[in-house]
Length: 413
Image (cartoon, rainbow, N blue to C red; front, side):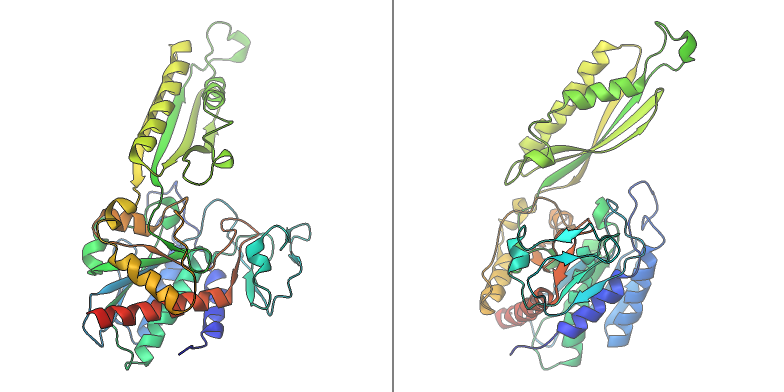
């Protein structure tokens, strides 16, 4: 049976997207920003309103809830994150709905120079007739991952008001700070209490991801010798010059995000801050294999050492921190959650897409911590920028896939 979830999903995403909940990597707080509580507290209230059980906001900033079982089967988790990406303006989002997209170019009311063209996006061209949601041109939309939030909430409400649907216990989790790699803490696997889980944080309809990047972050700090430039001869050591040498020495024609695709990893400079006396360079390192990730870390260290050797009066440090690991390393040992998701897609005539994701999700970290957690599509496109958009009908397909999946799990149980 096909249900019409379009209006509920549209209403939820428009409501959620208008709430500023951007995370902040520079903050040590949990969540990293107070504004994320606007989403978290709203979800607590909405879960209580629809009748979910065990609803609580943990002291580490995750909203948890339960849809009680109506049949035997393994407990299953569904997760989405409430924060939006720090890479682009996310304040004052004005979502707009384009009903029955006619296949033409899409312009933006607050930024007339911005154009979303079906000629440059075959996926957009394929969505003629769908209802699309975008922002107004000055902000990202935040479908990453408020579309996931909308889908999980719609799924939960439907199961709660239709107890005749057979399904095992469903656990819900809405996390903060996924965009800065801090969405999953050590306590979450135990508090979630499931056999396996799914994040709703993927792209094209049919995308079922069980392989992600492995990821590290790096911080290079350069301390020069500061002195008045008028009397600086043979005394000044300019940290900015040394930072420039490091950047220039790192690969640029290869091994950067803009020169790689497929299974190629990269070294990406995300921030440079400071001045002539001290500089800080922040980078992220990505590869699908651990040896490739380690090689990129070694390369960064060697570049820093080489530049340090040119100027012994300076102090250059390079620190590398683990973020998450390729979920494939664990999921390939038990593909049950992946196979369920693939079967649910096929049941709705949706060809599954299993391309490795050139990024990571909360599921990457959860899987590493012992909760197998592949990723399911939402339909989100062009995330982290002003051209972000999503099809309401893609979101509805994801909701249907999740409903079928939990019923299949009950049947297997």
